[in-house]
Image (cartoon, rainbow, N blue to C red; front, side, top):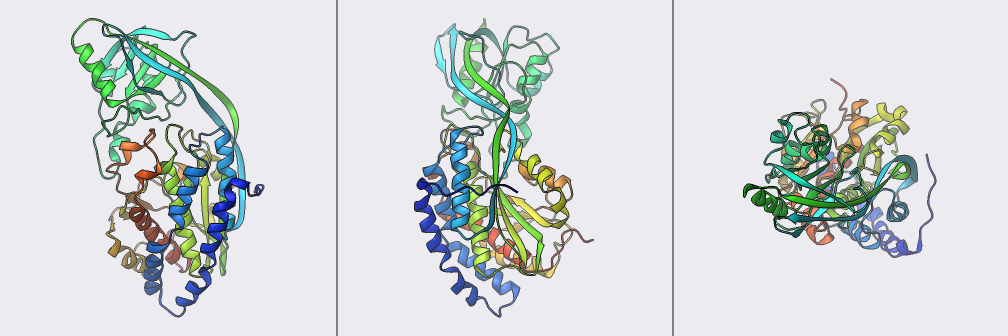
Length: 466
C-alpha cells in the first residue's frame, strides 16, 4: 500500500499534543457501555462538540506547513505531517499511497492596461495556463458580460485578441452558483482559443469585493489565462464601454511536469467484527498557493480526522473507519489513482463521503435512498437534528471530486451540505487563512460526521440493498 514516513521534527509538537487527546479515549468508551444506538450517537455528538482535535489539526497544518500545491516541497512536508498526525492520534495502518499526476507550477505573473488609461491589474494565473512569450503579450481586449456571449462568437471572431469574461458569481448557501458558472473558468480558455483569442481573462469565481483574485484550474488550451479580481473586471468593463480599443499586457510564466510524484495519506481503525466493510471519509491535503489552504481543504482534512477520532474514542467499531487525505484534488489525479489502487475493495465500501466545502455549518444531509429509512439512520437523524440539520428527500447528487471514480465504480455515498454563503469570498485566494474558520462551526461539522460514522460503523445499515 505504501511506505510509512517517519515523524519529522517540526511535527513533534502536534504529535505530543495529539497523544494527550488520545489518552482520554478509553474512559469515554466505558461511559457508553450498555446504551442503545440512539443514545450512543447523541453521546458521540456531544463529545465531538467539545473535542479540540479538528481545530488543532487545521491549525497545525496551516501553521506548520502552509500552502500545499502539488509538486512543491510543501506538499512533501504535508505528506510527512499527515502521517505523523494520524499516527499520533492512534490510527492504524497509516501509510502513504504514491501516484503520479500532471503538475502545473506558477511563475512570475503581472498584468496592466497599456492604453488608453495605463494602470496595473490584479490577476492570478489559472492552473494549466500557457506562459506568455518572452517579454509578455500585449493585445486588444474583447469584453463579454456573460460566458454565453463569448460562446456566441463564431470561429475566428477573436483572432489576435484577449477575451475577457466578466460574469459575476451570485452568493448562494449551497455553493451551487460555482457549479452554474464554473465553466467560464474551466473551459473558458479553450473556448476563447477556438475563436482565435491569444489570451483569456475571467472574473474570479468569487463573491467578495476585494482586489484579491482567486486561483483555480482550467482546461489546457495553449493560451495564457488568468483570473481577474472583481473590481478589475469591472474596470475593464467601464473602459471598454467608453469605445475605442483597450490594450492589456500580460506576463505569465509557468511550467508543467507531465508526471510528477504525489501522495495520498490513509489511516484507519480496523473493525472488530467486519473489518472488510469500510466506512470512508476524507478531505484533500493539497491546496492552491495564494493563502494557506485553511478552508480549502485544511478544514475538510480536520473534519474527517476529528470526526473519526471521536467516533473511535467510543470504542473499536464493528466496521472499519478509514480517513483519506487525497493528494491532488486541485490539479486532479488523486481520486482516479485511489479508485484504481482500491478497485478490489470498492464492493466492501459501506459508504463514502468527502468534506470539501470549507468549515461552515452543515445544514443539510442527503442520504442514499437505500438504507435511509433504517433504524440506524433514524438514530443518526435524532443525533443530528439538534444541530440544525435537515434531511433532503432526494438522494445525494455529488460525492466530491476525489470520490467521483470510486462512486462511479459502485460505492454508495452521502452528501453533507455546509453553509457556503461566504466560502467563495475566500476560496482559492490569499484570504484562505485560518482566521476564516469559526471553531464552533467547525465543531458542529465534526459532531454531525462523528455521529454518522459511529452509527454506520456500529450497525448493519446497508446502502446497497434494495
